[in-house]
Every structure is written in C-alpha cells, then in structure tokens.
Length: 278
Image 1: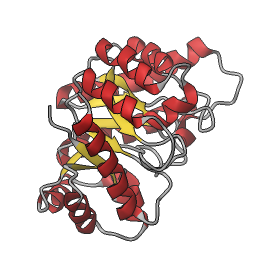
Image 2 (image 1 turned 45 degrees about the horizontal axis):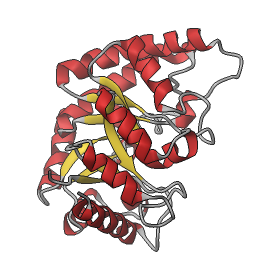
Image 3 (image 1 turned 135 degrees about the horizontal axis):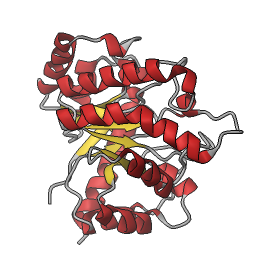
Image 4 (image 1 turned 180 degrees about the vertical axis):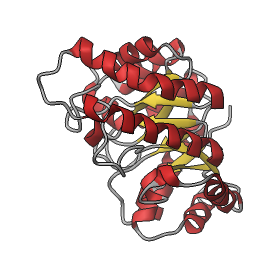
C-alpha cells in the first residue's frame, strides 16, 4: 500500500510563494499533490474560468504535482454562511461554482471547514438547523455525484465553532443528505480536541463505516505532525491497518521555522512512521 501525501498550500502562499514555487517545493519533498485553499487562487475564486483552472492544473503538473482537492472553501466570502437561512441561495451558488472549479482542477475531494461561515446565534433548534443545512447541501451533493467528487463536512474543535464538532454529529448531517458523495472526514488536530476517544481509536471505529472521505494530518498544537506530542505512531498505524489508500493532506496552521521546513518535517515524520508500521 503506497503512501500518498498532499500538502495544504495556504502556508506556502502566505510567504508569497507562487503556485509554480509551491509545486516545486512539494515535489522536492516527496509530496504527490497540493490541497488548495481557493482564497490563495483569487479574491473571488468562484469566478475562475475553466481555462483558469486548467492553467493552474498545468502549472502543478509541470512538477508532477496533482491538485488533490480544495479546502477552506468559504473563507473568501465573509458574507456567506451554511447556517444563516438569509444567505442560503448565495451560499449554494458559490459552493456549486467551487465544485465545478475543483472538477476542472482535477481534484477528487472538497473539505468544508470554514468555521466563520457556520457560526450560530445560540438559540437555534438543532433539528431545524440540521434540516436547513441538509437542504442547502443537497444540490451541492448532487453536483458532486455528477462530477465524482467527494464533499466532506469537517468536524471542527469547539474553539472554532459550535456547529459539528464530532464525527458522529457530521454523520447525522450526512445521513439527512443521503448522498454517497457527501461524507465527513477526520482532521487529527480537531479530533484530538473534540472527541471522547483517542484519534487512533476514532480511526479504527469510523473508517470501516465508509463515512470518512478524507484525512488531514496535524498536531493538536496546530502545527505539523512532529511539532508536538500527539501519538502519530498509533494514528498512522491505525490508518494503515484500515487499508486507507487515498491521499492524506498535511495541514499545519503554525509554522516551524518556515513553510517549507514545516512541510518537510511533516512529510518526513509521516513517511517514516508509514514505512515502519506493519
């Protein structure tokens, strides 16, 4: 079973490194892909054309780097929200455009985190809220089925949002939507802060169910794997034990020296643990 690692590009972009440079660094460090944050591509990424996407894709392919998917989907749109009924139509419109963008880029997964665009007032009825969010996502899921993209609602830590903190809560929403292409995912940092079991046990529990469409690797200190004390040996052993063969994305929020060093540290640790695990 081959390890496939992708790197989330926003840390590289924040240092002013263009897409060509991002791809070159990723390739040099042994990554097979980049998971792109749309806001690093344009101030209004939903307006990027098919030709724009193909140009981006070709730039990365020049270094044998694939676009594995998109994340931070709504961070460029402070006015949008999946929980605010008043902007439902506008939010759906942008998400549909981003699904098409991901397809043009060749991405196979989309990660919906975007905590600022899922804030709650505090007085919502949980059942009504889940029904609203499910109805918002149904046309998005339908387009993902058509384009063979897996769309994942991401459980986030309670520090970031009070809406969907645990995989179990995400699965409840997925069940309401009822699409094979709408799933949830495991972010190891968020899971370490939110779940009532160790991340390795969470992986063993949920991966066999088919609900997990993606995995992001990061430490609960918000850094790259290897920058803190999280038990990545057990985490990687569990992932490998469950037969995971899709790309996994390393997504640090805090750098170690600089973005390239951070990417190198994460890739080195995960690759070493993967090769050593049985």
